[in-house]
Image (cartoon, rainbow, N blue to C red; front, side, top):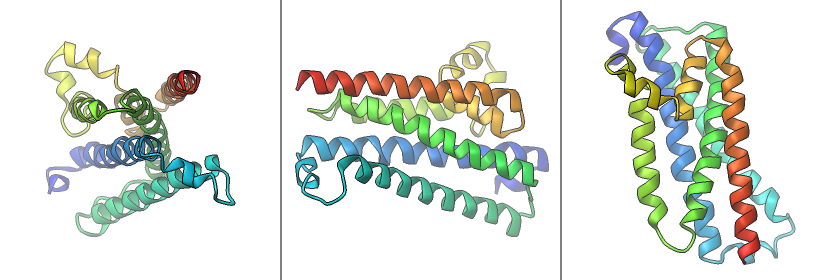
Length: 199
């Protein structure tokens, strides 16, 4: 019912809803699942498949991304057909590109956190706290950054805030989105490399 407040808030709310959905799926349905494949030695059974292991994991991640894009379409359809809020074509393009950025960045973050807790479940608590801080400090639903300068500054340590600013219309932040994607990939790359060396 947030769409009924006014059109300005609807413009603010819809990207936040889409972004939080993509962020949640990336954090909870990618990292922990792939970690479980490794920790429970399910991966060794995959090695007998005719398709190589990398292709299986890429396929899994692409399947989740398709799921998120379909969820995004449903949210947009609800905003249009039930509440009469219709984003422009440019807005839609930003939403879908933002979803790809969020899902990719937070998948790498989830994998990094999960592989730190490969032998136990300490990553679950970290992921939960990280997700809650991300949602509240990134101005997903409410502009907390206006209430306190500290919230505003700390919010920039979470990629979601940067991507949301882009999704809400500031094209300049596309550069920072690319930067977050690169940084999250590099951190994950070094983590997985270290894990392989210690085995």
